[in-house]
Length: 303
Figure 1 (cartoon, helix red, strand yellow):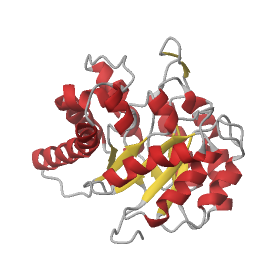
Figure 2 (figure 1 turned 120 degrees about the vertical axis):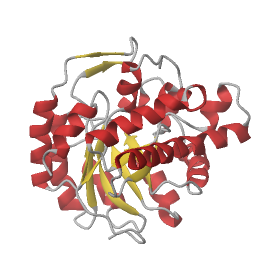
Figure 3 (figure 1 turned 90 degrees about the vertical axis):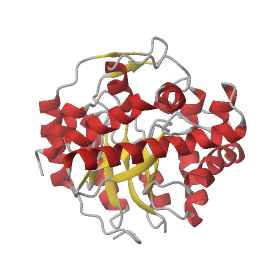
């Protein structure tokens, strides 16, 4: 039970937004990635959100992963415009939810999670895959606090701090979220079944959040599927009172320099793995990079 929300678990998340947008012909070769389209092509983002709702998702994450005030101002926006664009990402998800429910007549609950990527997403140099930021805790606090303050005023149901690769960043988020007005989840990006991408133990990161008052779920995303069961065991052992959120990538290999993926994702295999994750204790489940509506449909079929 989350304060003010009676949620029926398991919750089905969406998959990667970027792969759906690219399939529509959108050019995401930009430092802001999908967030570039919040202003230039909002209709595409709405359409991508709806595609996941049609596949059975009961929670959609916003297009704000790569979005930050600094990121938008670097591209020429004023700070006021940048702050509004962060809110617009949530508004587009709200619009998609409304369109879907109106067109289908369904009455099911659909939640919106405001995506907040790590500091490495702002750097746009692949640092979320290493956690090697070379910045201080004070700099991380400044970066995350501004987005947190903005998105707490939004219509998002949850805040989703995603792809966190660094123990220092987990410590910063724990402090910042201590007085948060919205429930949140924190999901790590991991190099294997025991370590964050920066090399610290997942065990230590989970312990920081295990008794947190506003973080209702802890988990993993943008991590190879083969490590998920091992990570679920760590989460159950170290934070038994928290919900478990898992949304791995396809297991394909991303090459940051060429911005390309090597490998092929199989929705049927993903569905079989997802069944294991649910059996092992996952409460919120979906996909990340290279996971699309066909994969989410396989999760929906498990319910």
